[in-house]
Amino acid sequence: MQALMGTITAVILAAFGAYAVAWYSGVVEGNFAVLLMMATVVTGVYWLAERTIFLPQRRRAAKQLQDEHNARKEALLKQGFSQIEGDVEGARQKLLMQPWWLDWTAGLFPVILAVFVLRSFLFEPFKIPSGSMIPTLRVGDLILVNKFHYGVRLPVFNTKLLANNEPQRGDVMVFRYPPQPSLDYIKRVIGVPGDEVAYINKQLTVNGQPVPRAAQPEFFDSDSMRYSRQFRETLGQRQYNTLNDDDRAAFINRTTDFPFLDQCRYSVEGVACKVPAGHYFMMGDNRDNSLDSRYWGFVPEANIVGKAFFVWMNFGDLGRIGSFE
View 1 (cartoon, helix red, strand yellow):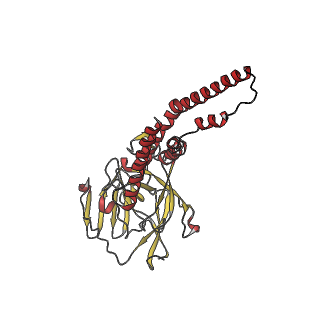
View 2: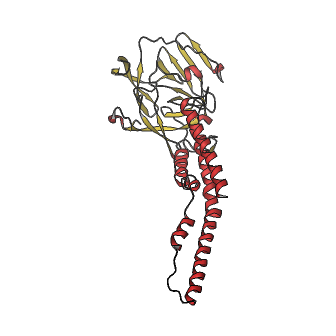
View 3: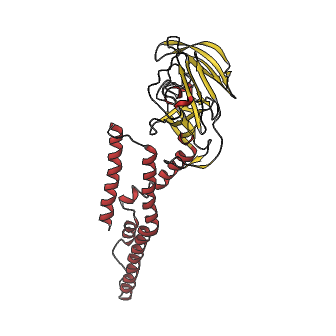
């Protein structure tokens, strides 16, 4: 039994390792949420089997060894022997010890379960990979996302179990990229269901009202070594800075169709869209360098991951740490 369980566990661990290597090398498109859920289930089964089967078996074997030792000791004492050789306690501890295949499964279950619950229902860390949210978020920022702000969702399947707050205009939100849901994107909520959003000649309007903005000092991007025009924009209860590149035209070069495309009107001056029910219109703060709803359409409510709110680390600039709300 021990040998069989050791072989089965070795195969399972090898499968996890092979998947991780294939993911890292780019052979397969990895999904950490699925991997974590599978690890939680597998180690949980081992943990339950340890508590109900394997540990009781080891305890019975240790008790049997102790009882046999006591019986032998009593018999020898009756024969007049006072010294009894044999390290019964060491043998008992060896019998009670977890085999390696339980150390690497049941032993890790509490830690994996804690990570699974924390990441799935409370907070999840993300790394900003691009400059689409500059100046609010910079490349290399490590951020925290509140997973329960918009409601509690079933991990992996993303089915909402418990409603909470609805996304508001101006929120910075992480979501599954509609054309490729295995990817997570981060943008700012510009339009909620029913809104008429227009971005014409680089001026944002919502429901026919121009979004107030005030000119700020030019922003210098040390990565691109370029200056951009910067504005302080006010949308709903949020104030944040945006960037514009004078060298980029207002024309939106849409390259793909998307659901509810008929709700958008494109022209040389920009785009105007009516946000359908259950969807959101997202834009990056780096307005001329952001692949967002202007290009690929609306974000369904089912794609929402959570609300971004805090930079917990940037190894290149520790001054970035803090809330950006």
